[in-house]
Image (cartoon, rainbow, N blue to C red; front, side, top):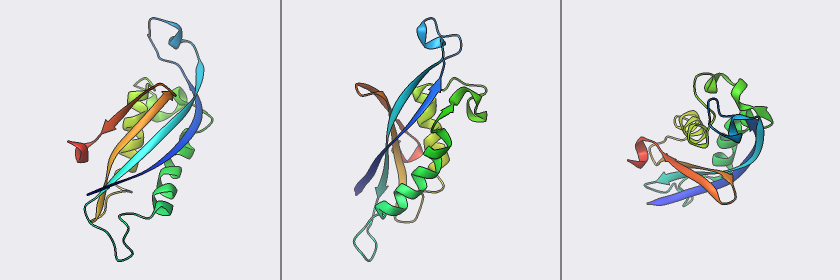
Length: 126
């Protein structure tokens, strides 16, 4: 098996509703994101997924988050745009785009700062 990943980033603002502290106030982050696809076999060129294809699909979703107030997005109308929910949103938005007979989306890692982050694994990671 091969875990193929790309790293990207976006900048956005958010606030955490009902949070007991300063994160309840509007603030911003420069989020770093790693998207990993797990390939079970390679194509005729020896690739699990072309990095160009992976970047294109990921950027389609990342562009919807960049320079936005995440709280104003429909995806976060009923849930806080926490790092956890952002990672799940990215994963769920990419899952069908990055599912193929050779590979499947495996995980999305979101870094809120350069020392704090988390990884979301969907069904492929269970």
